[in-house]
Image (cartoon, rainbow, N blue to C red):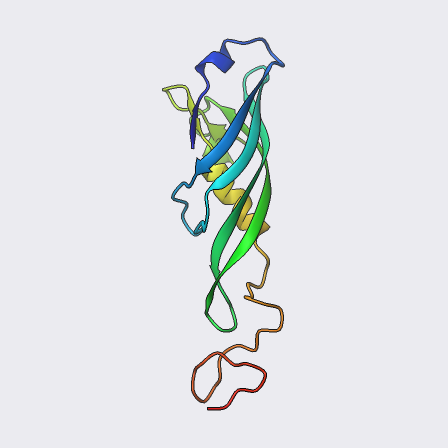
Length: 145
């Protein structure tokens, strides 16, 4: 999810560039996408940083905390991040880095927002009964071993 921003850096402060994001499926640690990301982003040039804002949607592949089955969960996130040439930007936590090739990588920001959007308890369905303690199979309302 790299965007070349060289032309944006040459613009006046306050100018914006719009980007459609379609068909992107970055490899994100701790997050498994069940479908491509889709949405849009706006990059605004500020004095010494770029402000990225946007909205993305996808489906996540998750594992139920009760029955351990895989399921998909819709995720819609709001992007909001600042990018700068500060090499310590990510470590300092308030900005993301711009590479020496004049690119920004949205993947770490997307990963962060997707993790924050996850529900605290991952359930395949609200009424999931979990695993049977006798046979280890997922329980249904009328479960028999």
